[in-house]
Length: 339
Image 1 (spheres, rainbow, N blue to C red):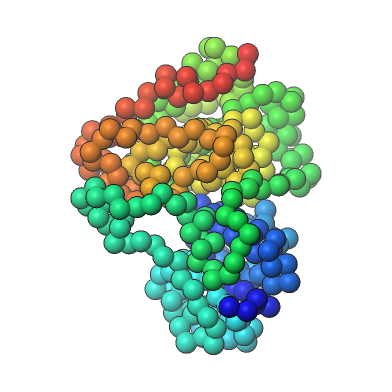
Image 2: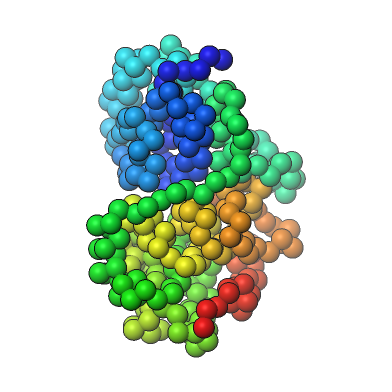
């Protein structure tokens, strides 16, 4: 198709999915610098776009709490802007309603629901391992120079970095530190907390490294017990910073350890040394860190994995071997411990 004067991208949620649109935005900006890029995002996730905001012309906020009136309002905005090309990277009923009948070419992200169903239900793997960020790029019917993954150049805002170093003494002292995000939205995506406790204990015993704990406000109560291991060397930041501040925090770290969560995608985009622990999910779904500095720990011997592409509140098989088989010692041996 002709080079569009403007393009509208739609991805309403969630943190990780929105972060994975960054390579597409950068590719558009690099290969089509005269094409203006607008983005529709859910009201809870506007801050996720802050690191990439300079490349976007407009960010349009969709308030999911007033979906009926918001659908009318957003449809009007789309109609008045006369976008020649819309890329629906969410592809659900809500975004279908936003784009239905618009005078634009609408290209929708392929979710491979049938393939995913067969894999989860009968463990029949018919996936090609293609990362989601690359599938987002393929959704847009334009020619791009290449699909190579590039880390995000991210000079953090000085005032935020200064505030973080004030709140976290280890940063201000210029020490090496390890950033750990123990949380995840679903239980089956969380490496057991007692395993994190054992790992942190071993790191404290074997090194003089400082450990920072990160997470959302909702995860604070879950994470807090870990600070009792050493209140002088383990600092809990969960719930203290917003999404953008956490992005800055990740950019300042030496190593990040996390589950298959938003923090994993932050570290991957920044090319940080990272360890990602996978439980019920698998890299075939495309949500894995394509980062040369990443190590993925997972148990590929289990016949019951994957049991879901999202997660459950408890293990369907009741043994939770996908996480329990990954021991703290296995993680410790993966870490290049600074002395």
